[in-house]
Image (cartoon, rainbow over all chains, first blue to last red; front, side, top):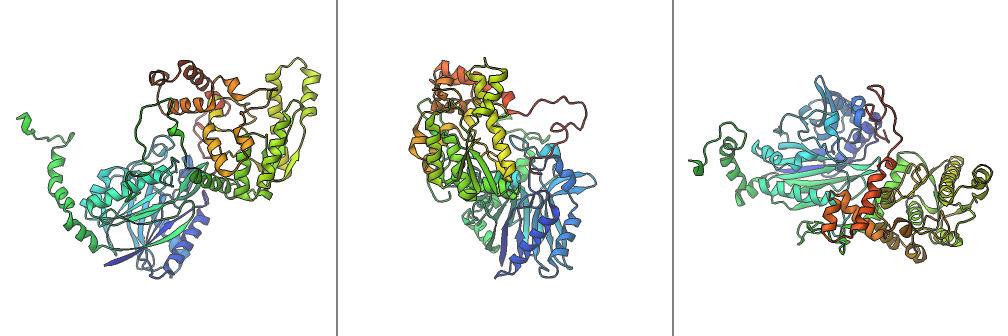
Length: 297
Length: 292
C-alpha cells in the first residue's frame, strides 16, 4: 500500500514556542495542500524549540498532550486524519526528555506514541545528559499507515536501535535528527556528518529491509549550523531523495510498505536475525545466563 | 555518496606526516556557502541587524571576512573601517582599498594616531612597540564598536583558528566582536577560501602581519610558518601529543614552540574568571546558550 510522507526540513524560531508552533502548523497546512496529500508529516528532532537550550529546557519543555492540543488548535480541521511525527523537549511528572511525538491530528486522532531518546549525546559539543533524562526503550507502533518506529538522532548511530525497531515489526523507521554540521573535506559536497548519516541510514534500511526516513533540522544556533540534508531510503538501502542544504523544505516521498516484505524475501537477513536474536541475547556478555561456548566445554 | 566508489568524503586513516597537509584541505564551495548562511542567520535572523562593520586591515583575514559579509548581506550593508596608526604600513591602506573596490564595499578611514598617542605620549611615553600595538588594537575596537552603535550595525570579527590557538592576538580587542566567521579556519584554510572567493592576490600572497609594529611579520614573530603551525595545531588538538608528532618526523623545536603557545594561552580563549559563590553562578550553574 503506498504511503505518502512529507519530510518537513524545518527551522524553529529558537526559544519562541508560540512562533514555532505557528510555523509548524503552517508547514502542516502547506503539506496537506500538496498532491498527493501526505498521510504523514515528519519534523526533525527538537523542531519545537531548537536543539541547544542547555538549562533552557526547563522553560521550553511541554507535555505531549499539550503539544498535540496546540497543533490541533492551530491547524483547525484542515489536517484531520493526518499523522505527524515531531521532535520536542517533553516534560512529564518524572523529568524532561528529548522526545518525538507520533500522533494523528483532528478529533478522531490522538497520541499514538511518544519515543524518548535513548542514547543521549554527551560528548564534544553535546551535553544532553546534563539536561534531560534517557528514554527506556525502542518499540514499533501500529500507525494508520503501517507499523512504524521512531528514533532520535544518536539512537540511529547504534545499530541495535534499528535492530530493536525491526524486531518489533517496523517496516518504516523515522529518524528525527538535529545534527550539527561538521567536516568540510573535499569530495562529497556536503558536511561530513551528512556523509555519515547517509551511510548509517542506508545501512539500517538494507540490513533490516525497512524504509528509513531521516528528517533534519535547519538553522544556526550559536555558530553551530544544522545543514538540513534530510533523506529517505528504500528497503534495499537506496537513497530515494536528498533534501537541500541550509534551507527549509517540504520533501514529498512515496513509499510502498509491501516493498519491505519483498526486500526481506529477496535477502532474508531479517529472518536470520529473528531466528538468532534470542540465542544471541542469552549468550551475550552480561546476560547472566551465558551458556558455555563449545570451546569452553 | 551512495553509488560512488570510493565513497567521497570518507577520510582514510593516515599517520601524521609533516609533508601531508591534506587533513587541512577544505571544500571551498561548501565552506563559502556555509559561512554565508552563518552570517545571514547569526546577524539578521538571530540578532536582528541588517548592517555590519568590519575593520579592514589590508590583510587576508579581514579581506575574506568583508567579502563574505558582502555576499551574505549585500556590499551596501557592510562598512569597512580603515583604522591606521602613524606606524601602519602604507601597503595596508592600499590593499584594504583594493579589497573594498573588488567587492564594492563602502569604506571610511578613521586615523587612530591621536587617540592612541593622546594616552601614550602624555602618560606612558616609554611604552615599547608591543604595548603600543596592544593599545592600538584596543583603540580600533573602541572605534569599531562605537561606529557599530552609531549605525545600528553589528561588529564582525576576523580572527582565524591558528591565531586563536596560538594566542597571537590582543585579548579583548581582536576577539571581541560578537560574530566571527573565520574562527574555526586555520590560516592556510583562510588562504584557500580567500583565493576561491576572489580576494586579490596581492592580499592573499603577501606575508601575514599584525602590522602593530613596523616591519613585523607573523611568521617571524611566531618562529614557525603558518602552514607548519596549522598542521601541528591540527594534530595536537585532534589528540596527538608532541612526542607523537616528533616521532612522525615533525621538527621538535617547532612542535614544542606551537605546543607551548597552545598550552600557555587557554585563558585567552575564555571569558574572565568569576568567583563562584552560589549554586546559580552564571555560566557554571545557570546555563543558557548565547542565542536563547
